[in-house]
Image 1: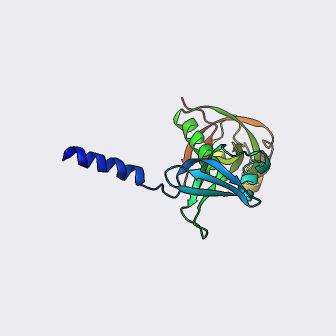
Image 2: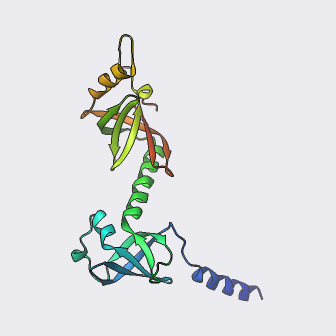
Image 3: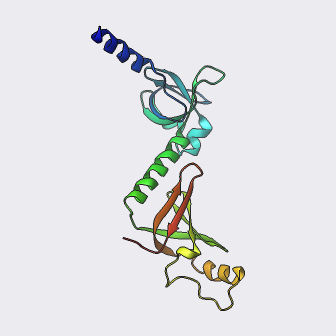
Length: 187
């Protein structure tokens, strides 16, 4: 009897459908003007819209039948009965996973300052904006202003735009896609 239970459990695991939000690999089975159809083994057929492919930097004309594509399930079943997939969302998840790994390893990064505001600096990491609060600037770079006002501090912070700074990731909120950085290097 124990063997039968194990045998049925194996089938139950195989027949369990994937969930929305997971990343899944599929093989291209057809291209149309509207997008690409993928065979999602052991599940059903998925569809990636042409616009999504374009935003992800994929040229639909270079995709061939049999190519494997990693995408994220955004809807298990659309109006036509297919599973809606997104290459853009899968890449975003991959970027944020990489950012989490960098934070977990406490790696030092050299990032370019994109812009400034009254509270700090905005730097870019793999296309994601990170915020470097003025309070997290090193002593060397912290704005030294007589009679400080937000406007005076902002003027000082604007001087860093275009420069590279060595920073570490101190906080990540993957749900809201927020990244907080610090120039105060801790080991």
